[in-house]
Image 1 (spheres, rainbow, N blue to C red):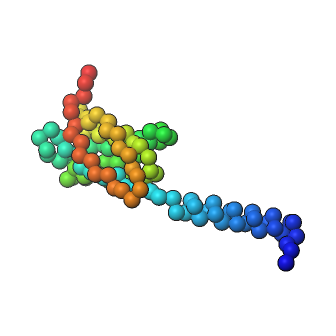
Image 2: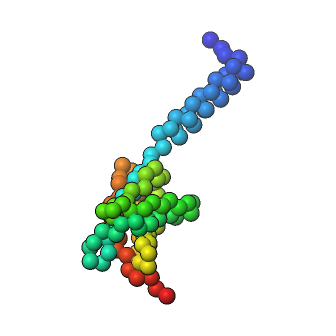
Image 3: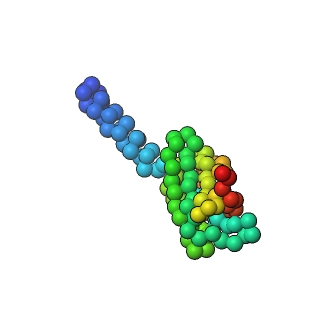
Length: 115
């Protein structure tokens, strides 16, 4: 059975569109979670945790709960610089790589800001 050129081209466009839509629907996302604590190991509530994608420069942030825990959902895989700030305290950035089927758990200890 022969397919006319116009019909074949249309069928190929539809197939390509379906492949693109399907691939984006199954794009893997990851969760970055952990706890912010001070140098004595006490939970730091209301700290701002920031994760910056190294490749794109896009930043994501959240605030820790009363127990110092945080969670940032729906992140693309790749390298992130993760830091925390709580009032006059800050944690230096930590490089984290989110990879296949992985949730990264971080514990950062804020240190006094340098002047």
